[in-house]
Length: 488
Image (cartoon, rainbow, N blue to C red):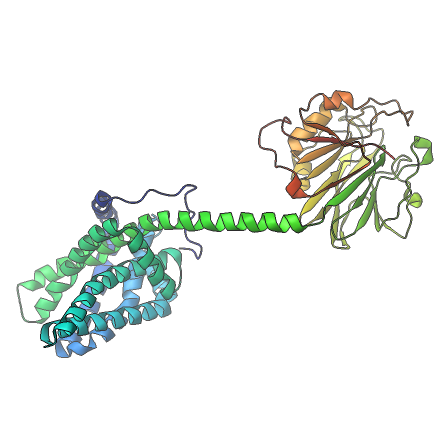
């Protein structure tokens, strides 16, 4: 029992057939037999409740509505027990008492609604048989048939309320929708439930009216109604809700997807600029400016001339730690970090600059720059394949900045394995041989040869948001785009 209902199937369930109503009766009989002990306990409680209500009704028939209200908490508790039986949960006495308390107020309200409907139907029947006006007889007769629909609505309202843990009004409204959407099934199920109701209540009323032979049938009838009928009505309600909820959830999901696409379309794109080697400047949506791994002039590329709010340093080597070149008064982040600056979260993950088994270069810190709608991961001078702890810490990456040149970092083959493990929406290769640098490292071609979607932007900057990039579906790296930028 949950506010959002049980997890619906991924596809819309087929409309229940007439024969399904009879099949559910067989299934309900088996479930009731499996839980015969509690069924008997509830039957005793239900017997005394019905007998008490019937005694008052015999004295003053006008108090039928009040009797319905007073019995409604027991009705709801019995429905909750049947719900547990249907879902094969613990359906013990404590669970029933807990359900009685949980649904007490709501069941009284539902009982009051039921009582008003019963009172109106009773008045209609009286008018239909006693009125001298033909028009009134016709009008009352129509409402008598409407009473059958109302009775069916309240037949489902109790199990719907406990199944979805919803309000009394929503239970009534959803029950009406279920019936209108499945008229044939609900007609047959209603007939079966009506027969069980008659078996459970008529003998008791007759017994209290002085028919001695009805006593035995009263006990048997109440046992049937309290156990079998409750389980049957819950099975029928759950079957209908599976179809109803699948449609409703599908509708909600489509609306949420549309709203998300609309929201993403309004977002500013994040601008990613490559300055060469491993140095990038970012302008995140909202305007936060970031420079990552600025290099020294000895590297060979022109020094970046850019201001920033934040500078990240993956490790203290001259080709990655020249924070002084960045203009403004940026906050410099090194080592283990988890901060929010200017609405952007900066966090780092510890890794090794060295290949497995080596200890030449020390630690390397992977930096993640993330907003609610975008996450960029800069691997720095990663020297190792990523382990499970590191992959879990990275999470879902939109754009991965990955070294591919080898020698001081992972090589092309290992970089491909890392991409396959991280599964970002896009990749930008970094730290590879170009005409500007004299480092003894490999170029980018060996890495690019593993990908089918290589995009040479022809610019130093790339503006992107998450909605521009598809989430990779297939295994491997075949559907992950690689974006190649020019350097300043």
